[in-house]
Figure (tube, rainbow, N blue to C red):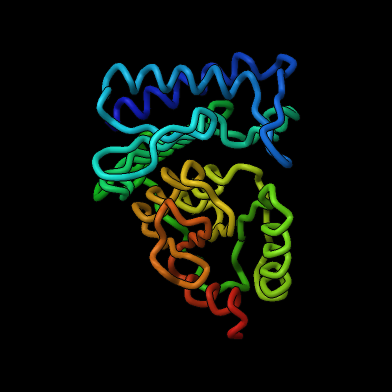
Length: 254
């Protein structure tokens, strides 16, 4: 499954790069939510590969929908995470593929095709970037931390983010918004940022990235500190060292 996930992510990434210079065929799915012809083409490639090799496995994909996460093996994928960036030719986007076993992440692959960076994790086997082991950062205090965020589509999510940032900004180092939850989680795993949080994620946003963070030595919970599951919208992913302090600030305890 790991081999197939890597092959699917890299193949889909190749499609995205080939189409990247072109004009986009854009369709609105909802409020601040779009899909492009490139999303569909990349997704078709991934679905074809998985269905040929694992016809009995469930698949949940952002564009095609699919089965709910349940027992057995489930593939959870986003063929183009960062669609708005892609549509604007802003060079931050990725392919994200996670495999769940009984609802728990087993394999995670996030591929950034423009930078030729492939982040890979397998439960119990650590996390790697282009076959080199990666680990979360050693930053131990929130005041020195570089935090990743994303705004989400809905105003309710953005309002919550503003409340959280109002508490965090006086106490943290600085904040970056990438527009790709998958890459933001991969960057925590690689130690390039110290934390990432979002109250409105979908399973395809975090199925691969949450496993990367954990296998790289980090920690993932909800905003209340409860164990994180990919079916939950709230996610706080950190290097582990600043996690407790981060939670206290988020919840107004300091």
